[in-house]
Image 1 (cartoon, rainbow, N blue to C red):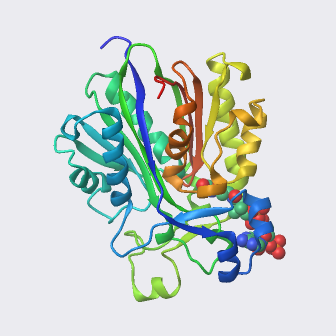
Image 2: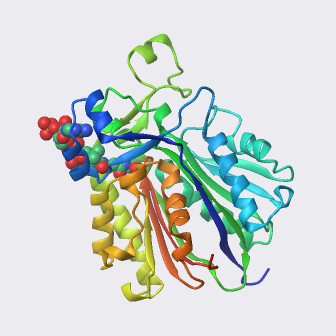
Length: 330
Ligand code: UT7
């Protein structure tokens, strides 16, 4: 297929209506608005309420809007790659359930689990399917219902996370689209950020529930240091190896885990604050949802040829950066 690039040709986000504020969290755990804002940058986050709802429900709503605005029929989609750490069920893949709910009757699909870097890994995988010519219309979704694995009695984690996400359409393009990617991981980092129970090593039992082992376990400051060093490293590396100066970059689109991490990455790239997409104050850390939610919110400001650097760090440890040229104006 020659030198085809994989370009994002549409993006749609979804966040649930319920807003969980710092003031409400102050009533639930021993914390303060001041601590949360100064240590993380988060003011509020969204929570998916209602029985029996999962990431597939949020994704199906977003995909319906994505198809409407890109004027693509559901049956034209070849493949759905779904990044999540909170799948509807352990199996089958949330991609399959979502494809069914969204009417993607000709798509095959699978999930990607790479924690907070999952959506970048999924985008990288989709890029290769497009560049090889194997597929022409791929949806890359990133949604999490983090409230399902957050312990709302643990102040160290419950202030951080929110529910929501976004999906993009990826299509071949002669010029614009993904130009370069760097994907890395270090499995020794798993001990610092994981969910202990619910997998096959420690299946759920009365004991695991009593001991709250099905919630997020995070050694925050260790993860913080690794996130700063690895996200900053790959974001700068992808800039340098593509000979991009700070002036030539339209936006850094970082994973939204902590405003202080984002700021460290930005400074390492010598970018001014206005060139960074930030919505952590409104949505917190939605894990696989953060980067597509940013692209969705900034979509109308973007122009063909704009240089974007996407970067993330997450459990695993996983991290990576993608350099892309935006392909359209909306
Ligand atoms: O997205 C995937 C990857 N995840 C991340 O990138 C998250 C990375 N980590 C972080 O963002 C930060 O480490 C946190 C925001 C989680 C924590 O910030 P920190 O500045 O690293 O704080 P800390 O964990 O070192 O805790 C400092 C103090 C502790 O008190 P003592 O031991 O010094 O008395 C905590 O108990 O802050 C306390 N603390 C809180 N205080 C008020 C922790 N959580 C809270 C809270 N409210 N919610």
